[in-house]
Amino acid sequence: MKRDRVEDYIRSIPDFPQEGIIFRDITSVLEDPDGLKMAIDAMQQKLEGVTFNKIAGLESRGFVFGMPIAYNLHKPFELVRKAGKLPCETISQSYDLEYGQATIEIHKHAIEPGDKVVLVDDLIATGGTVEAAAKLIEQLGGEVVKMVFLLELKGLNGRARLSKYDVESVVSYEGK
Image (cartoon, rainbow, N blue to C red; front, side, top):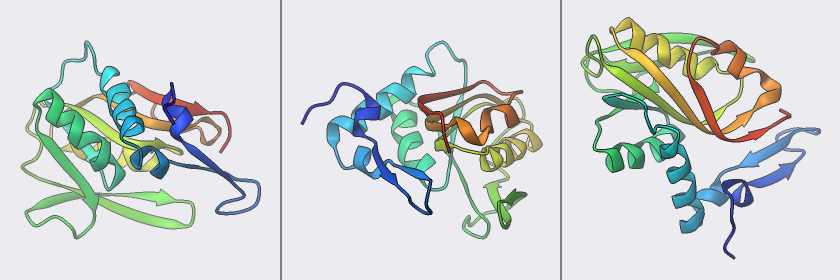
């Protein structure tokens, strides 16, 4: 069935992973060629008029959406991965999770001083992971010129945490 908007492809699952939460499932977007094309095109449109020379995606769904955008725009794509997954020399950034900490890394050679970088991920929730990715890029001398997400959960206030960045999402939900 053909749908008109990206949000028409997103499946909402009530009470997952716990009661009172509505899980926004993007696998339904990925499973439909029209939905996937619409999502990537909509995210790419958020970059019109933005001057940048690299796209970086966060593991793993940032790869799913960032790679086709990089391909379409003929830009290099840089990986931001969980600690211990990249083979060359890296720098790392730890950040807080709801129950603990996590660490992400990027290759030291991935970003050159003066690079203008777009960060891509599937979801902005609390903003902790993408904020850590931005710190990595800045530590290497790059500038984050835009952050683009497919989904935003406004109730988790990630946009406020990222207020110094240009943040855009294709679909926004008011809750958590």
